[in-house]
Each structure stands twice: as C-alpha cells, then as structure tokens.
Length: 119
Image (cartoon, rainbow, N blue to C red):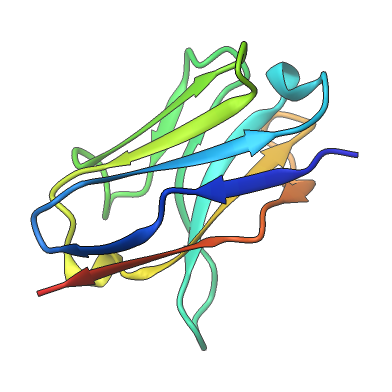
C-alpha cells in the first residue's frame, strides 16, 4: 500500500509562488507515474500536471502551462509542483496521485492541500 501526503499549501497573493510537495511511502514510488489534480467544492476534479516515473516526460493542463512545473526526486520519494504567477482562479484543493500503470488510472491519492490565491 502506498500513502501520499501533500504539503505546502497556503494563502498567497496573486502573482506570488508556492511549491507543493507530495511525500510517498513505499519502495516502489520510483516506478509510478505521478500527477497533480485540483478540485473546488461542487466542481469536478481537474488535471493539473503529470510526470513519468523517470521524470523525463511531463504533461500540463493548458491553464497552467508555463506557470507550473512538476518534478520529482525518486531518492526522496517526493514529487513537487512549483506554482508561479498564481491567479485567484488557481484557488483549489490540490491532490497528488500515483499510477502503477503509465497512462492508466491513478491508483493512489493523497488527502489534499488547500491553495488560496487572493486578488
């Protein structure tokens, strides 16, 4: 069983930055594709970014491309989401997730961390 724990959320002003971290338990973390998603109350969960097991491939939603960067450190069992030039519409609960099969469904989810961007 893999456990994912997000941290780094908070309240920031528009234009500022935050870095989210997702720490994973388990020795097989380095073999998982990882992703970040976000969800506001009453809305559907939205894909934000994903990264392959090696870190060699990254994918972004068009709404965050050029502002957010996903990365991972397999030695630390951690995936990051660097968020720059934050906008009020980036306000959401952010979740990290792990996929055992690349391109397949996400099997493991964290509990989420709140990001609030004030105008």
